[in-house]
Length: 110
Ligand SMILES: [Zn+2]
Image 1 (cartoon, rainbow, N blue to C red):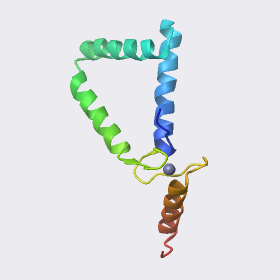
Image 2: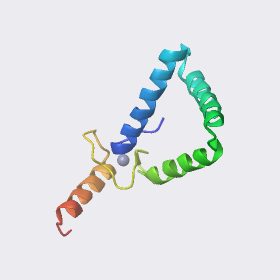
Image 3: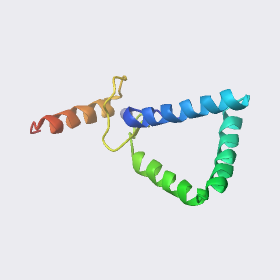
Image 4: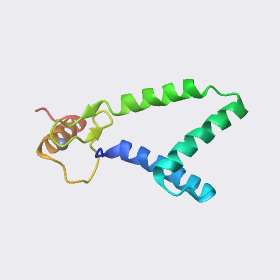
């Protein structure tokens, strides 16, 4: 399981809220089943609305790839760019990166 921080954690939370509502509506009995059913139902919805699901899936994968381009080599946290705006306990490398990010934000020379 990947450790998410910052906006990517929020994005995963948005998806969880959608899946929880889907489970409420369908009584799917576990998370993988609910996600598979939801994707299938999104295909039906795109058919109904004349939307190109495969194009939208490629678009979503593109967003995901861009938003997970950075990963800490030590603890494997996934960043959205340089986003380390979090209150988690960070590994030494992540903390160093966060402090450098703060210096840059405040315009402090290293
Ligand atoms: Zn780290």
